[in-house]
Amino acid sequence: MQSEAVIPQFFLYGEESDSDDSEFVHIESIAARSENRGWKIKPHRHGRLFQLLIIHAGKAEVVIDNNELVVVGEGAVVIPADVVHGFVFTPETQGYVLTIAEPLINQSTASRAIAYFNSVTQTPRVIQLSTASVFSAQLQTYCNLLSLESNAGHSGKRHMVEWLAKMVLISLYREIEHYHNEQITSARLNSGYYSFQQLVEKHFRQQWSVSQYAQSLKISVSTLNRLCQKEKSVGAKQIISERLFVEAKRSLLYTQINIDQVAYNLGFDDPAYFSRFFKKQSGLSPKAFRELNPFETQF
Image (cartoon, rainbow, N blue to C red; front, top):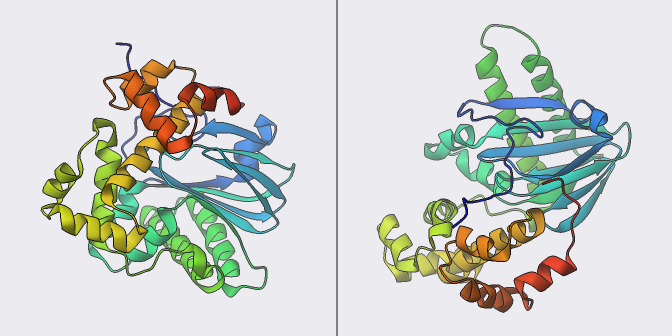
């Protein structure tokens, strides 16, 4: 079997790193990251890093996985870890790219703030910000302060940067809650379901069964299914299958590895079974899906 080939995961776009800095926060202007690349960032993804784009002016064509979206004027783009994304900006687009290490966000798991953070960081999406919103203005103020603090050398810088990054997340939560209620996960996040989500991210390639997840969570299969029904209106098995399907689409769209190898990388011993699984989910064979969705990518 060939060694596993995966979509490249960049620390920041174009910068490979094996850093495991749990306190990592980075902010830079959109121009600093994209102007010398012709205002275009090709599809890629970040491992264990949450990314947020705050756009103050201009236009961005956004690809999240294989969904194409547009932000005009003031907006935000939410990119959870491991989600494939790319951008084309109009020249002189103004705003920030904020990158936060997942462990920094997860430090708050024992606090009341985790529900707010997870509501913002768990779902990839584009949010058009309200120009009249006090929360949108607050968001811009904190981003400006965070940029200034990151480039200064004052005492307590690390703590200030962390606090400001969390203030940005809370401000975005308020904006979503006030103007986009239909888009936000309930702040009363079910901690059991969240733990299940985290386990799925770790073990979907191993194709754990529902009973294995339940055993790891120290709950019954029926309790796990109730949690999933409450949060997503589907059973645990469907959520596991959907995560596997998303990764299969990413591999077919954003890599050139052959379909048999995609199957092996996702834990399928038999490529034919992978093809049946994929066709059941999409209505297309893996080969047909790849041929119908040619995607410009440098990877």
